[in-house]
Image 1 (cartoon, rainbow, N blue to C red):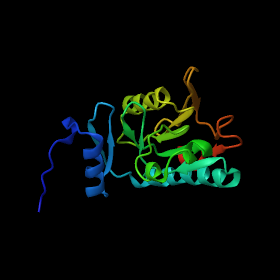
Image 2 (image 1 turned 90 degrees about the vertical axis):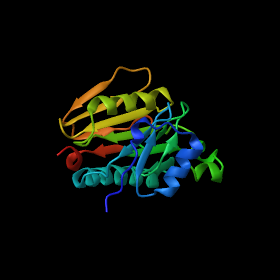
Image 3 (image 1 turned 90 degrees about the horizontal axis):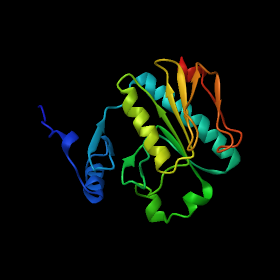
Image 4 (image 1 turned 180 degrees about the vertical axis):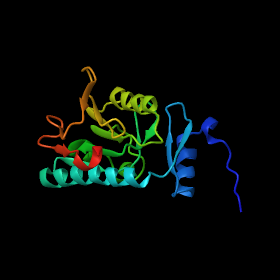
Length: 191
């Protein structure tokens, strides 16, 4: 049986309707732009899923060791100050910012921009779209962002108030000073 879906790319919906759509369709990966447009994302390709797990695991281990905040994988959504609901491939929030939220706020799409975000480009991602998303994070309060592009073996480093930094085929990338002592090893991620 073929199920026809409406074209959601032009669908603009409220926070409440987006929440209802997500609850009714937990198997879908959805985001919403600041203008309220719904974005349906395909499941990650297998190699991208392995890379995502590598990134999230390294972030989680560092966070467990330091206790400085809360780490998130690609399934977590956040409501940015501009109203967009985004789900970075990995994210981290300082402990005091996370704990300032109520349990109810934490249990929804938390209304804040993570301090640190990672986007991992897959073959299905348009580079210009992912770069635009990274700028959106910076404009909404992220203090550090990494766009990792295994297709060209580059890492783009975003920091508010600084020019974009591009690293060609790095072995590691450092989260200092935002994530003190965090080093992401890129061996299995860029290859």
